[in-house]
Image (cartoon, rainbow, N blue to C red):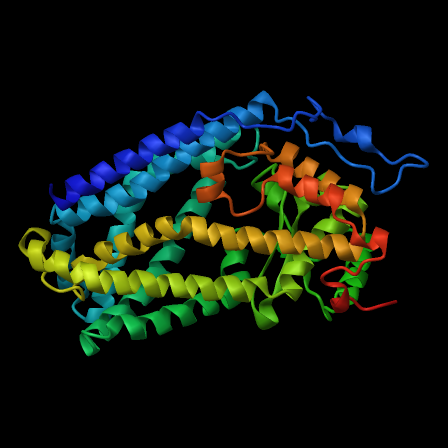
Length: 442
């Protein structure tokens, strides 16, 4: 069985696996309330913050969105392997490399020409899939506000950003391969690891503003309260931004990104509109937990290690593939321009195989950020209600299937997060919280 046939068989197996995932019902707790309306949990006199919040049953629309999402995810994963494999094993990549050398003349410029042509081809052949998954589907479920022009603008900007990043990366990698054919992957690992940290530093100031407008909080009272909370968490000079995501989506979210002087906490304007004051305090405390516990640094380190593993695998296996199939591929060296899709295949494949492990780590960091937020706000009910609203506004299911959670679950399930919010309150029995020592006392 040839390399292309082997890859096709594996993709077919993956396709059947994910179809099986998509057929699994999204489950809800037996005690869940069908059609739960969060307005029914408005505070009234005598209701304490420890009153448990039931996990809501997902709507039929949310279940359908969940199932179709698995199928679309599978199609995108399979396509991301199939396209470079087709370009590689048909010899087209080798021909494209020779064409790029004639156009670019010099090594660095030829690398950028190849990356531009390759990504442009991938963009064009993947356009229908990207369009239906990222535009049509979200509009069908009422989750998107984007016009087609805005979606296309963002899509093309993303492609050009990838051209710059991939072009720079592979220009350096190819030079290191020629300089040290045996240990290139070691030096490239250090370079790409440094690149991960650099991009984490630069993304908030160079990339994010290309897609959305970031500005100060519009609700000054909320901003003042969040700043006070940040000071309690030991964060001085916290940079808190509001981003106009309502121009793109009806979904709600908040996040922390950046490193060092670019680290920032960002609230989507949609989440500000949908959550009340106490719920937003919890969400911001969660993001502060990522900040204080240095989760961005941890995840960047793990990304760098996984890249090193992919490069090592490319060195050990890629050279053997070229030795056996070099004539068919149209190149004889891993440093050749035509080998770039081969390197991408190794990185993509390893990323997929390591997804369960990397998701386990990110779920842990999200869980600890939840713990941090509960301990500093001590408002279990507001935190649980925030998760209920996230589930309803984002058409999520509270209990995804096990295999789906394994491969796609970057966060704990919302059902698990609501359960944790209902039950975690050590302060009520006089016990110290795990992160109490990090909080400043008034």
